[in-house]
Amino acid sequence: MKVVQWWGLQGVLSKDIFGVAEFVTHGISGGCLADLGAFIFLIVGWFMWFRRNRQVFGTELMSEELVLEYIQHKSFLWLKNKEKGCGFSYQEWVSSPMECRAAIAQHRKNRKMYYRRQRDVG
Image 1 (tube, rainbow, N blue to C red):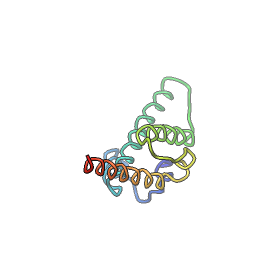
Image 2 (image 1 turned 90 degrees about the vertical axis):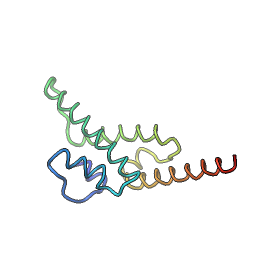
Image 3 (image 1 turned 90 degrees about the horizontal axis):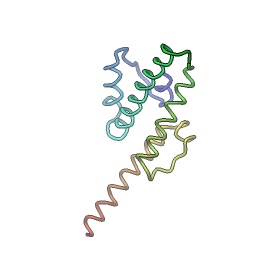
Image 4 (image 1 turned 120 degrees about the vertical axis):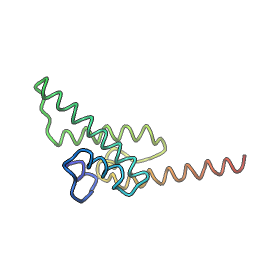
């Protein structure tokens, strides 16, 4: 739930994992945001599994805040690696992921236009 709040999304999420996956990948206004939503969903799923194993097989307990910080950090690292030209900081990502998403969408659009021009010239 903290991840949903972090993204500023509103609505009722399904209690079924497949319903949540459907909302995250298709229910969010398509395109770039759907890609990011699917990625965030995968990180959350993986980390929940990881966290559960740590609790079952060890003694490590993690607060919801620590889980959210981990998800924010991993998703930021992935985005900075995948979207090389995006110039937002970790703090910007944590404080306003939707604005960063808009920056990523604009960056992708500019990159497409650049390659189209290069193709047309060449």
